[in-house]
Image (tube, rainbow, N blue to C red):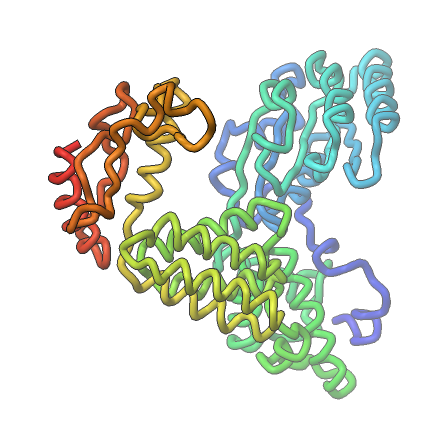
Length: 443
């Protein structure tokens, strides 16, 4: 059994020590590890190199992208070169390609190039990969946390297989924790895990294996610091709470999670679920999202999804945005929550949103026509000689405040864009508009 001193004295991080040496040790991602799959074929030392294909691994942090690449390298017997897009440039890529050609021609050896965080490469840097991938000089394994459709150039995408990794399940995380506690590469039995501590680490991991092992290492250090010499302590949930101040949410303000969470936030408001909306609001706040961005999305939601079913929604959303700008965070969370709950629980109509989009579509299609003469400006000299304003009827002269006359151009006469719904305040708008349209001649 390792002593506490040797366990925590400047060793390689636990998450690195516990990287699988083969695909059999990989936790999760079983949908990518079926017999005959591209990853299994790459890891097979007996597989023919010409049949291997370059792959792009896309998934959240801590789901095993680097782990899979290194497991392939250890199992396949192929030459393995690793670059990080954070530090590597075009020169580094070209040197790898040249050496790969040399190794192939002189020794018949295939090179696997693992490129981490490929989304950080510029277009020019990604272009430098194309000759090697296309000509088979290297088998590329690229990893990214961002949607490759937006972050990887099309020629490289078309020459590679895109494989999507899923967040690890609670069972997968449990396997990682249990193995790290007992394995000689890990804690080697220096601690035991209380079930509550294990559950806390799984919950805090949020599908991220690296986070689970980092939390385990920190919690074990806390437990060992309080233990008697030579005694294997039990890690408690209090040790976990002390080591991990709060859950570090898997949320990248520049990545996919940013768009996924705000999308879920807006859709929860649209779907009238205030509890789900508050959950996603909390995730954004705790991850340090710009509160002004959240406020802007609330204003958009009030106009797009609530609309005239409750005109007060836009007022409240705008007031929340002003309040956040005025008082800042963390107090700004309160008006944001108030606006979120109001919008989620009030009546909703997208009629105004649909109406303006249909009107814009007509205009873009060339359906705008000439403004009717009686509506044209008649205030400048010579306008009346052109017939501008002739026949215009002033609505305030009528008791109802509406007089029959044509407002749309001839080409669009009778076109309807706004169709109010029988929801909330828009029910009253619908009844009033029906009376107005009858006076206007059902136009």
